[in-house]
Length: 286
Ligand code: FE
Ligand code: ZN
Image 1: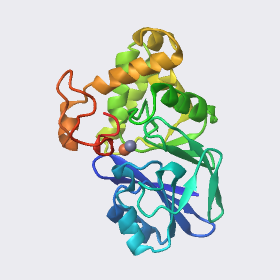
Image 2: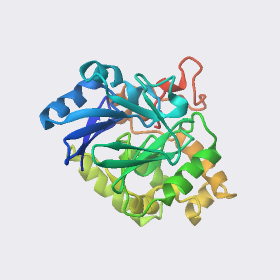
Image 3: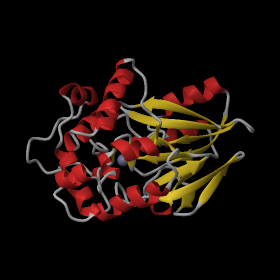
């Protein structure tokens, strides 16, 4: 199995998963069709499936274009997203799975960012969409803080330490700035931030991460660590999670980052979801 990250839009990742035994390939979260199609052609693989982690436009935007070029593609998503994923063919739920050539995928249901968010797990790799990012997590749009806490800490948290995590957005540097804000004394965070700054300055990707790295540096998987707990005002781990997720919603990205994404920063005290645009058009996290 080979996994090829394909940068899309301003900071999304689609992932081409190639089964080397059969030459079949699946694409996770094609934000747009063209960059994906280019890699499919370069690699000379047969695209047979689209794997959508959730229904947001920046994860399914390429479905229609790819279907036009590759009629008969299987399009997988959570059962509850059948009406909001273009070309949807196959509904999945917790404990379900799919095959791609010789590869067998397991599916984990992760309600929180959206109610139908899922993670695809294959050969020690997990494709987490906007549920778990490197050093961060997606905004809680459709579920509750409690749901998102469980999705991250109990469902994804149940995977082995060496699981490779392929996440939906390149938000790592800003996430680590927030992690440093939450835990200023966490040496692992400081070290990772320095490494990630070098990686990004060299124009490289920070994907994939591992669950082991996340357990040391991702504040949303560290709600029981003393520093995170104190910053979040105490209470149950899920309450701490809710408090720091709320802090992250209000945490400012660097000005250059906001300009690059063409996203206006909210004014202080502005509602998290402006009434003019539906959640599906909101940024996934920052
Ligand atoms: Fe997203
Ligand atoms: Zn999303």
